[in-house]
Image (tube, rainbow, N blue to C red; front, side, top):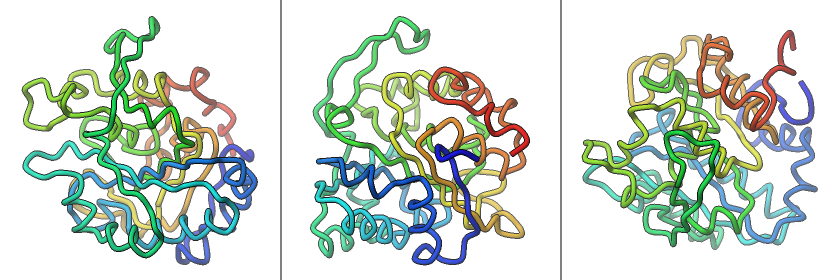
Amino acid sequence: MTQNCRSCQFTSFTESLPPLLDSINAAEIFSQQTQILLKPNLVNTSSPPITLPVEAMRVLVEYIRRCSKASLIIAEGTGEPHINTFDVFTALRYDELAVEYDLKLLDLNEAENIKLSDKRCKVFPEMYLPKIAFDSFIVSFPVLKAHSLADVTLAMKNMMGFPSHHHYQSGGYWRKAAFHASMHRSIFELNCYRKPDLSIIDASIGMAEYHLGGPTCNPPVGKLVAGLDPVAVDAVGAELLGFAWQNVEHIRLANGVLGCAEALSGS
């Protein structure tokens, strides 16, 4: 694998994540930033591995603080009905982390939006996204999970937290239901507007069949994946779940446009 995508065996976040980040030159990259937005996968209030363990985020924050003076924001925008993003932060102890490390927590559903347009996009030729997404270096930090509509939910799918439910509920039960009808194309187009700058997948355990519950991977996958190319990172993640990346439509659409999965063939 190239510097744009590396993986390692998982022992613990403390032992495994910093060397993995070093292998993609993350310290130098972080040192050049003034504002870094950290986007964990906090889909709801469920415990890990459905959501990202707060300990994983703690290790990432400590790593960045050692090499960068950038301001740090932890941001999420849940689409879950009947709860808001700060309920999720509190349930999963991200509020405690924010106090301990003087971090800002941001509900992306309530952030200031800007209107964008892209003629390449068929489902969303126009899109509203938070302005802060374009003022920040974005780290997408999902958990390795299969998904009922997207096959897998990884670094690119994790960007679904950015669009606000105020624009994308569309009458469905889930508050971002506008993305569901053409899920793969929607993920691709969202990332055409804004893809992550650096991606990390917590593949220490893995959700084998469904992103909100069901069996975990047995045995646990026992990996972490990181890189600067979200397409390459997602291709590796898909294969860890047993999916050929070529058969995951949103990764196939993104290949050669938003990054390169081809380089992973045979790696």
